[in-house]
Each structure stands twice: as structure tokens, then as C-alpha cells.
Length: 381
Ligand code: NDP
Ligand code: MG
Picture 1: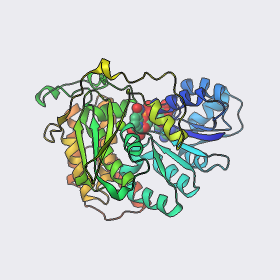
Picture 2: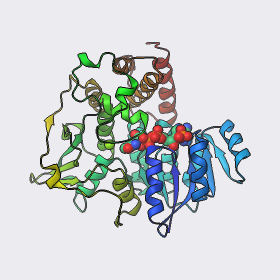
Picture 3: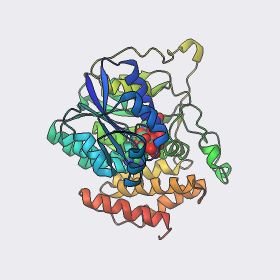
């Protein structure tokens, strides 16, 4: 029986992780359950899964929750996320919180040699060099939950990383894939939240519309698989059937296919190296799909993808700035305070005004993260 610490249990990935756990009660149990402030959504999950430890975002939420349930171990804040990740009985940490808030928990879980199923891509974008060097030092492997990275991981099964020639990451294109740049002026939050293929949390859905999600995934892939940026290729593939590919030095290409359902990569990260049945997920019907399409990515149409490549290649603190600026700009857009195209403008300004720091340590990363957020939020550039 694997004991799981689930960070971000009330989110899109969190809820689907619980769907997987519910299917296999003899395999998994929830030891720790962490969420932000959404008590209403968390209460039935707590009742059903009976976690020994609960973590919430802040003291205020902790107080409110304590009045509603009788539980002797409710923690709060970043420290609480860390405690859940390193708790002795925990075998697997599923990091599915949104944003760079997940970083300290990932680092401490590595130190404690836990199995880490990582959905929280912002952790790798903001501090990939720290995360990967800690993982190497402690002999811990990160199991990707992001569908593209799970596809690459599965396509790599048993192969040597040194035989990789290229990674090919597929992009569905998000809600605005058929709009021109002129048509993006004046698009609303509601338009952006309407993703054609996947149902996900609000922030990642906006990231998909701006193509920043693919940019973050390129950086995530660079760190997870140790492949240089000029060998990570993105192509537009609107059907989301091929979830990504690996081209080897002998030109052989391995791909992973399936219906778009996050439960597949979530479960694979939980069961690796084994597989279990996933009965509710629709089988891939290639006869019904009949045709697959692939298009070249246009970096002028999608400047967020270009900026992500540039920040990744520049390295050091640039990806910390890219991530923090994006998180804050997307939040401002969701709050109705800036337009969709302002997101990329705010990020570009933040990157232009930042003096790159080579090999930043954790405290430098956390302070750059905070400073960038303030600059973007209050438009101080
Ligand atoms: P959601 O916004 O749906 O969920 C985020 C979760 O994190 C919620 O449970 C939220 O709690 C919790 N949370 C937020 N802030 C804190 C905090 N300070 N302390 C504790 N918990 C917190 O996000 P998604 O599930 O969509 O995404 C999660 C991660 O997975 C992201 O990094 C995303 O990029 C990645 N990912 C998501 C995919 C998807 O299909 N959704 C696909 C691939 C990757 P509350 O509900 O209380 O606010
Ligand atoms: Mg993805």
C-alpha cells in the first residue's frame, strides 16, 4: 500500500488523482491532504479519504476548518506543505499545487527521498537547476504528471538518455489557436477559459491560450530529461492524440498516444514501473479519429513561447522571472485588471528589466520571485 501526500487536492489534478486512488483502494491511501482555502470542496474529500494530516494555505483557513471538523493535525502555509511532504509514513508526494509556492516542498521531499509525482511545473521552471541537482545528489527520480512529459518518459522506457536526438512536444494550441493576433485584442476571460481538448485549472488554461504553457513545458522538459533547448521542438497537433515523442540518434521516433485524459499520466506516475487498469478512460479509437494534423509553430504568433525559449537559453534567474511575471500577469488578467495581450507585454518588460543572476540559490530565487510579482502587479517597470 502506497501512502500518498497530495498537495493541491481540491484542484483539477488533485481531484483526478483522488479519482485514481478511489479506483485502487488496495494500492493507495491518502496520508496527507493539502489545499488552499476551498474548505467547501475539501470537506467531502477529507471525510471520504480520512487523511492523518491536513494542510491549508493560511492560519485563517486553518481556524475556520478547525471549527468544522474534529481533526488533531491541521497545519498551514509553506511549512505545512513541507511537513506533509517529508512525513515518515509518506511514500509518494504528488505535487499538484499551482505555482512556485510548490518549490520548497519539492526540494524537501527530494531530500527525504520520497517518490515524487510532479505536476507542479512552475517548480522546475523557477528553479530547475536546484531541483535537478538535489535529485541527483539524493538519487531521486521525478515522475512527470504533465501529459507531454509522461509521454516522453514512457517513450524513453529502457532507452539511454545519451541516445536521444530530439524531443518533440505536441501542442493542442489552446482556446485561441485559430485566432490571428489582431483578433486577440479584446478577448475575454471567459473566451480564454474555454479550452478545446482539456479541462484544467484556470491558470494553466490561460497559459494554454497564450502558449506560455508550452513554453513552461519546454523548460520543464529541458530539466527533466537533460536535453538542450535546440533539441526540444514544439509542433502544433490539434487533436491531442500524440502526447509527445522522442527522436533517437538512429532517426527512430517513439510516441505515446491516448485519449486526452490526465488520469492516465497521473496513474502512471503513481504505479510506475507497473501499470494498472483504468476502466473509465475512453479507449483510443484511431478509426474514428481517422486523421491527425501537424503544423509548424509560429513564434511571432505566440511570443510567450519565444520568450520561454529565450529565458531558458539565457538560464540563471531568467526563468524565475519568466515564471513569476507570468503567474502574476495571468492572475491580473483573471481579475479583469489587464487585457489578454497585456500578459505577454508585462512578461516581456519584466524580462527586459532583469539583470540575470547566474546559478541563483533558493533564497535568491524566492526574493526574485517576490520582487518580480510586485513589479508586474504594480506595473513598476
Ligand atoms: P488548480 O488551480 O485547479 O488547483 C490548484 C490546487 O492548489 C488547489 O487544490 C488549490 O487549493 C491548491 N493551492 C493553491 N495555492 C495553494 C497554497 N498556497 N497552499 C496549498 N494549496 C494551494 O490547478 P491545476 O490542478 O490545474 O494545476 C496544478 C499544477 O499542475 C499546476 O502546476 C499545473 O501547471 C499542473 N498541470 C495541470 C494540468 C491539468 O490538467 N490541470 C496538466 C498538467 C500540469 P484551493 O482549491 O483551495 O485554491
Ligand atoms: Mg501539459
